[in-house]
Amino acid sequence: MYHGMSVARTSTTAPVLSRREALRILGLPAGALLLGACGTTVPASELSFSDGFAGARVRAIMRNSFIDELNTHAREIGSRWSGVNDATIEFEFSDDWREKYAATARAREGEDLAELFGHGPHLLSDRLVDLSALAEEIGDAQGGWMDAARDVAMVDGVWRGIPWAFTAQALNCRVDLLEQVGTTVIDTYDRLLETATRLKEEGLPLAAFSMSPDAPNDSASLAYSLLWSYGGQEIDPETQKVALDSAATRAALEYFGELAAVSDQRALSFSEGGNNAAFLRGEIAMTQNASSIYWRALQDQSELLDVITHHRYPSGPAGYHQLLEMNTLSVFEHSRNVDVASDFIRFAMNSVSLRERANLSFSFFSPPLLDRINDPAMVWNQDPVFAGLKGSNTGGHVPGWPARSTIESGLVFQNATLADMFRSVGTGEASVNEAVATATHALRRVYET
Image (cartoon, rainbow, N blue to C red; front, side, top):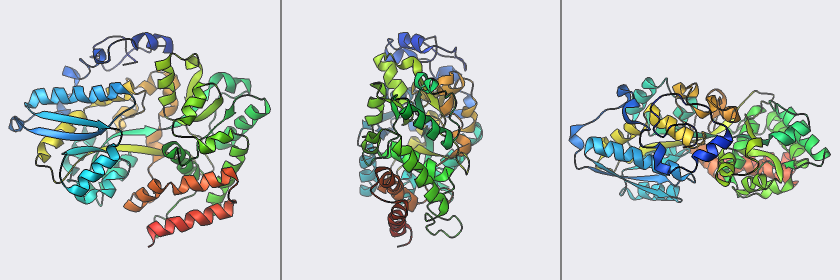
């Protein structure tokens, strides 16, 4: 909706718009940019249609996006698929989508497919159908899957879902404030600490990196990324034993303690939207987030819009590593419409629709397929403001890395064990050694009992 001059986008490229030009487009009706989004531009090799689905009805549990246009876009895809196949798909967009699909899986009745979060395919693997053939078909058509997508969706060699989108965070920064302290690039964690220190010394709005149980996604993003970038790991991939207690983990915690000391202390108790609000009120200079701060600034026509940018997460002593959140589309084994539901997923995963979804959300929801990374029509290849959100295909991982994803690594993520470890050091509630000991005990209860 926000990038692209014409109402019906029928080409694979679009002109670059300034953020002020995007504001003008924001006033168009939500559906105006959707009607021609896929149409005849979808490669025929990525679509298939069946005469055997007539009259079928498929029901889906979906995440209720804070970006209304994404829900509209999903409905539009469903409408096109329905029209071609003379079938019906009904979406339930819910804020409690995770609870709903978990309840459906437990009951073994209800909806046919669902959008799962994170390790959902592992946690519910015995309730989901094998989509391996479809996953390989889609991957072959679009350059292959990101490693993180395979890790999340493949359980014991079987694809239990089709990775639909990943959310990669970045450093959301105020360009004007960084320039005041002489910073244009934040490529290492050392440079990040230097920048945060200078902001404090100059009496400017501070850095504020969420690390709070009330901000589970933002907090996990930095906790995992920082741990990996310093060489830490929760589990040894060879022995499958807990390996958190290491010099690398301690170095990451010591670093975070230093960063927290020169940052806004409110960040250690922020809610999930607390850093967004503080940033847009002009109270902080940088934080971790996806592109949702920018999206909100665009909606509100904020005067900060032209000074927001995104830097990729920094590199540490062990290189660049970053947590990715992944959403998958999975079909329940109790469904009486497995083939029909699977065909809808195939339709939804065409390259044009994936690109549209990514650009509607300013890459908040990005396709985990390699051809899309360098796709010239992707927003991160058109506007340097979003360039920092690109590149996670090479250094992006899901919880459990460098070991394979498992039910246990999904539970550790849900328990917020690593974020709690970092938070306790940042607040001074625990020493580094105490924090490592507490987290190690929690991990052993999940992995080794």
